[in-house]
Image (cartoon, rainbow, N blue to C red; front, side, top):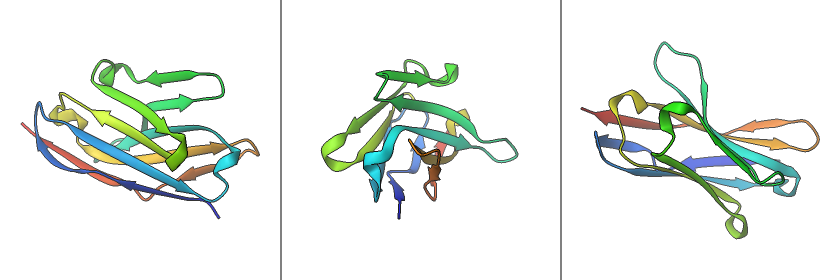
Length: 117
C-alpha cells in the first residue's frame, strides 16, 4: 500500500516562502520519479516540478523557474518543494505525485497554498 502525505501548505503574503513536504510510505523502492502538481480554482491540474532521480533530471514549469526548488531526502522517503518569492497566482491546491516502475501513478490528498497580494 503506497501512501503520500503532503504537509507545509498555508497562507502567506506575496513575496513570502513556504516549504511543502511529501512523505512517502509503502513500495517506495519502486519509485523512479516524484513531483508536485497544482490546481487552482477553475483551472486544470498542472505540473509544477518533477524530479527523476534515475535520470538525474529536475524540471520546472516556466512560471516557477528560479523561485521553486524540488529536492529529495532518500533516508526519509520525502520530497520537498521550496517555494520562494510567492505570487498570488501560485495560489492553488498542491498535490504530490509518485511514479512507480511498474506503471502506476500515486497521488497525495493535496495541501492548500494561499498567497495574498
